[in-house]
Amino acid sequence: MIGSTVFPGMTSQDHEVMVLAVQRGGAELVRPRLTLRSGDHLLLQGSWPALERYLSSAELLVIDSPDEIRTQAVALGRGAKRVFAILALLVVLLVFNIMPAPIACMLCACLTVITRVVRLPQIYRGLDWNTVLLIGAMIAPARAMEKSGAAATSSMSSAPGFGSHASRTRSPSSSRSPVTNCAPSSAISPPGTISCPGSLSRSARRNSPARP
Image 1: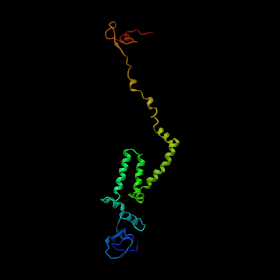
Image 2 (image 1 turned 90 degrees about the horizontal axis):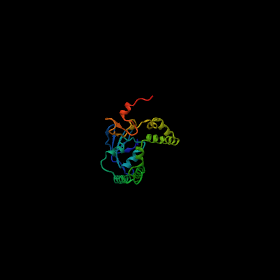
Image 3 (image 1 turned 60 degrees about the vertical axis):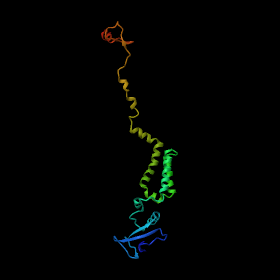
Image 4 (image 1 turned 120 degrees about the vertical axis):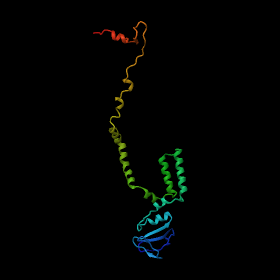
């Protein structure tokens, strides 16, 4: 790009991107034709796919990426209807439990790529590859721990008292005094005594002599 001749209103060969203005040193250049130098700023206009294709060149340093500018746009794009249709399909699949949620989400994500609502370069730029590599590296050790039984062993060793807690705990009802069904004694018993089947009355136990 350095050394190329440009001018405001110049279009690319496929007429998809147009140069609106050129700045050098913070000032706009109004010359009919000028040669680009290192550090010049170009203001471009075009469709989103065309801008992404031209700005992916290593000879250009993007200051305002199309993704950041696109989030500021209010008007809906051409793929808005397709996005709403895919979202409605996802809601139907989840509400009526037609298929598992992970499969439904993966299907709708693939549909956004197939219908060209989202392009693969946009997905690649939006991915955090450090997180992807971290999750991928954790799968093999997790499967190995699950198959070898190390996961179960570590979970049991982290809480050693959980298994025997129930056997050491006494039921609340066992600490209470035993209950005996008793009825008022007949007229033969002294007043104020209670006779129980198979047991002596309380006053008889107090007055009975102790056996050697």
